[in-house]
Amino acid sequence: MKIFKTDKNGLQEAATEIRAGKLVAFATETVYGLGADATNDRAVASIYEAKGRPSFNPLIVHVPSLAKAKEYVTFNGTAERLAATFWPGALTLVLPRVEGCPVSRLASAGLDTLAIRVPGHKLALEFLKCCDRPLAAPSANPSGGISPTKAQHVIDGLAGRIAGVLDGGSCPVGVESTVVGFSDKGEPVLLRPGGITQEALEASVGPVLSHTADGTTPSPGMLLSHYAPNAAVRLNATTKEPGEAYLAFGRDYDAIADVNLSVNGDLTEATALLFSALHFLDEMKFTRIAVGPIPEVGLGVAINDRLRRAAAPKHEKETVGT
Ligand code: TXA
Ligand code: MG
Image (tube, rainbow, N blue to C red; front, top):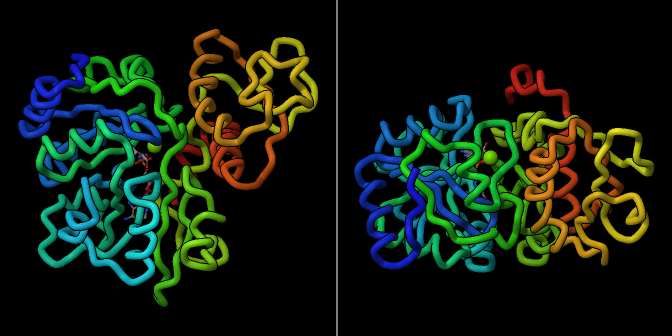
């Protein structure tokens, strides 16, 4: 697979592949996305195939501006405000498709809604403009695995299955976008915690429901086992057992740490390192990873969500398919 240059020529070359219906991975501020022309059914179908992703799990469509997003989905007042506050950035909005929406139905996995975002990464925005069409892009990893935050992670996971990757270096946020949908009454509902904290959302639009409280179904993609390294993961570990690698946060258990997500206890720094630390421990062939306690506030909510899924028994990938 090709590593495209990030200059004008490289971007044009990658965009030509997209317009021909091929798959190109690209850096965003959250994680690397596996991009395809969202208006091309066959291209979108090939995303599911390359990832081994269940076809009931819809994709996020990426556009370069709010104005473009309005060509595909209908905004309510709250959505408009969230977009104005957080775009470009790590927020995905799930909104009704406009009538005659040209985005492939496969990207919505048969739903009447579409997940959409404007990424906050210069390279991703330039690439979207070059392609001149919306890009469906899930995280660029085999389904169920750890999301990629470096081009090398994409190459390790998908070489031979995609046309290439646009290497934008390490992803600065490090976890996926926060996904927000809306209840029948138009209230915002948190469908997936991510790079924008619930506190930040609420400072902009007031209370945001959790999908469990709201009673609506969560994101179809919230499989219990996900983001999983090959190693078995043990959470809230305050000791390191023989044969385990220890992933620490802060100073408390630094003495037994193999990797520390942030010695200073900085959740932003820890988020940026999380997936690359899990990839690294896998490469080191650890079969068991113990993870120290991480506070359940701010970005800690997204970190703990990913770690709980990494720790879930892998057979639940098949059986928990909500
Ligand atoms: O940061 C991100 O969001 C990355 C980068 C590449 O943009 N993308 C990403 O995509 O994480 P993916 O496909 O791995 O996750 C998409 C999530 C899934 O949980 C999926 O179920 C949910 O969004 N989703 C997509 N369309 C939806 C819809 N119409 N209704 C509810 N949830 C939806
Ligand atoms: Mg993913």
